[in-house]
Amino acid sequence: MPVAQSNGIELYYETFGNPADPPMVLIMGVGAQLLDWPDGFCELLAGHGFQVIRFDNRDVGLSTWLDELGEVDLPGLLQGDFSTVHYRLSDLVDDLAGLLGALGLPRAHLVGASMGGGIAQQLAINSPERVSSLASIMASTSDRSVGQSALENPNALVPPPGADRETAIATDARLHRLIASPGSATTDEQLKRRATTAYDRAYHPAGIFRHIAANALAADRTNALGTLKIPTVVIHGDSDPLVDVSGGLATADAVPGAELLVIPGMGHELPASAWIQITDAIAANAAKAL
Image (cartoon, rainbow, N blue to C red; front, side):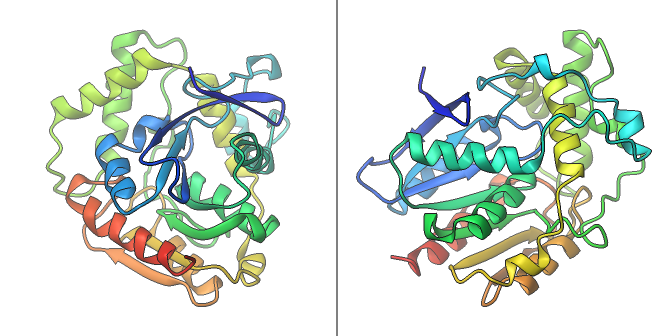
């Protein structure tokens, strides 16, 4: 099992493409396993001439789980009680930096989705010399005035406590229907199959809650993004119900010279119908650094 020692934990990772090609690291969001970078999407990027690396963030998938830290009081968190926040977004940024070091990569192209976009943005701010290019997808700047969720019930985002396998899978499938592109061609059976694969690979709701808490306390990066001088593309769907497109617009406005791609009808997902458009945009942006 390919794991990298990073920041005191183990991160599970997988690669696509030629190891001799420039590295491109994909960072996923809250509670999401590397499976949410579909194989076909990764293969398209690799076809553009990159060694593609996807990995599980801490506390999800096959990377280190941190249950010894304790659980998050999610209702309290939603009411402004941050006493059960056990780590910050900065820790996940340090994990990413450690992954690059463990893999012997002095520089890499970064592609982040949702919270993963925030992680990629922050590493570019902290260590611009380590980031060849930046692609921020369905993410925001952590400015609370933009990128708000349109979902009325936050509890729909998480499995109920003590959920059995069937209930947890149904909850996950329902969430991904809620955040999918309106009119998505993805069937309920496909969503159930995806949720089943994720559950059977690594079901860990406590880690999802700790991710939510870390993301909730992320500092506004707007001003710091103004210091970036690396090729940047911001990609967002205009129908994203989880991170409103205003978050993407604000990110593009904050980064000098950033390209902006708003995809009509795309929700908070990587729909197969947009894979070519998205991967082409990422590759074109990365080519500016070559």
